[in-house]
Image: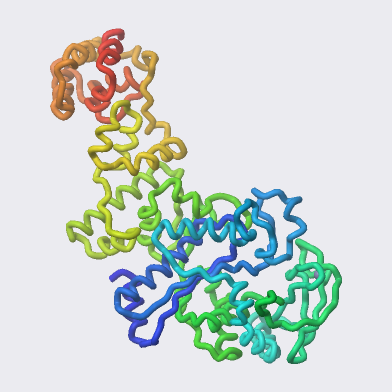
Length: 506
Ligand SMILES: [Zn+2]
């Protein structure tokens, strides 16, 4: 049984009136492709629950209230330096047309996962605060600051000062949050300082003040540290299921601390948690704010949405894998595997694989083309194949074949027709030259490529050539390589006069 179906039937037994699936991300820059895994995994659980008749919701939280603690390397450092330490929703968008920095990157990511068939309702953390939904949690953690400190001490085995409070004010003078430290709470207001040396990446302004920690429609007053905020968010939203990547879920990690806060301070049951492994891209795990590498949006340049989704659905969530599109077979095999899964679905051969295919669909179940990706890559390099590509129903994949050919294909896969007789053809034997002349004289009468392919082989045999020598003669004289796409197809895709000239000039 597929893992999310199995999990859903297990969760169904707990009989909650509503299962609320939630995932989250801080949009601090272009969001890495790895974050799509969380989105799709949560989506799979949500869909399995719905299919089993469990009343469910799926939300995605964009943590737009988090501070900017680093500037992505694709942005102008000098332009953004002054915003370091400020919440992302207060920083201008890199491009016009968006409310703020957070929205710009969040919507870019949302567009990708929507295209891949996941459509959770979006929640902005800032709204949770300004609608007052976090205030109950804020009051509880401040009133119980002692308990919170004790949890930190026990978990991290380090001293936490008695004047440390689990809250950071948005400085009323400079607007930064990374730099502020609350040192007192009287039940109504917190006292805080904006420190010049609180963090390495920016300086506070030195302001001291008192303010209510409770946000309302007039604006956001401050935030909790995220390990404390996470359980408050569970409670504010009503989350019952939230998984996370292994980094948060390890023993003694943030999830353990958040769970203790939920149980001991908030009295809220810890949502069902599942752990998933990361996918490395080209052997590396990358963060969104560093900006290196492969953003979520990049995946849809190289794969159709349903195959990008398939890449995630078919993964073993407990096993780290490496996706390296630059490796010779990665992309072509992924297309092959997708076709195999489609076959399992339509011919009901392998039920588990069929389910993977079904869950990879975006919208209605769609039968993929049957032509192999590697063949399509050859076809797009041959002239006059447009009709044939259309006939095979593989037009939609052409752009992916083109991108693969341009970016990732090894040299051996590119078959450009040489406009001059290739140098490599000079060493053909007399028999090979004779064969080419014969093909040139036959070509006017050819209609069927399959028959022609057999005929070429037989003509070669009559001249004492083996298959490799026969077809090698054709490839060497047209593309300058000793291998290539199916020879008869290649010849027939070209202008007949060109073939006659080339095969007789040798
Ligand atoms: Zn300040």
